[in-house]
Length: 418
Ligand code: DSN
Image 1 (tube, rainbow, N blue to C red):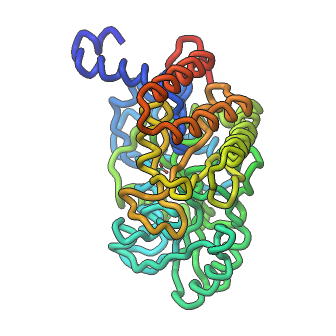
Image 2 (cartoon, rainbow, N blue to C red; image 1 turned 180 degrees about the horizontal axis):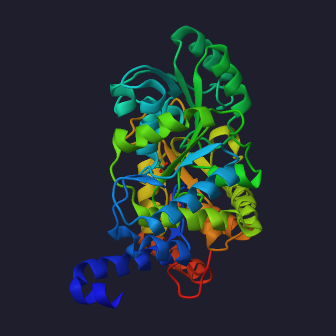
């Protein structure tokens, strides 16, 4: 990046340091990944120079002959992959995508039933701190205390009592599958629209490792930078009857010009996601998460639901006499980057919760497999046992460095592709 180095050495240096960090640590925040060099090239392209309010063939400014082609490719690929009747790829990210869905389905007020943030839901599924709980009347469903799984009987009961216009399913911190068919039946029984936010596990819906949202749901939303390995962005897929409302909500309802360079990156990521290699990658993400879960359980950790069906595990650090933050801080010191997270029925606050959330998408993109996941589980265990021993943490840090050196980071290490 010669031009950047010459123009703004401070920013250049920070980017170089971040490259180095991403290559040399175990990135286990389950919502993060490595985009391919092709995705990064599209996202860093001259498409950033163009304004394109509107939609293909219906723009407000001239000069759209290339931009229309980019957006049509992204839309067509999204529809085909997810078997959706309509796609909008313009949302700036996941929260704006969900906000557009509220606007499309309910206008400026209404009732939403979503998964409780503390149970693993997302802020935009009705949490009181988010627009979704500020501008909309919200109620939340949770988990069965014994199993840690979504309490579908509770969802049905709440739907009957609360009478929402919209029900959100999908989660940010839930290690099991979501039963879209069951949610659809509940939504239909109260005349609500069903929205699935599959941001965390969209890829698994493509590879068959998780049920597909369509035809059960009315609307699907997703970020594009998690398992999907695209640039930071969002998309909304929906039934044809909602296409006009969704498009109007995104533009002009909430946004101005789309980020065309991101749309191009999304198109590339969707093309990559259509390949058999990507389905194989998703299978390995799940197998790795299961191997990580087994490795942690065999070393004495308690996991929420005792395991996983998807790309993440949730450790109850409280059961090990720790907090999520204490463990996350020590792990970062040792080169393992995860995040403190609430666990179901957590007695602690969101600022210092009991859980630690760890995911396998990024490590799997680097080519690590089940053997490495067991090694990682061992390193987590050693870290937890040596929280204040700088020498031991140094030693774990060098083992992490050696592990990372054996698995080059795509998009960063020259020649390494996703
Ligand atoms: N921030 C994302 C996550 O880490 O799950 C959700 O938006």
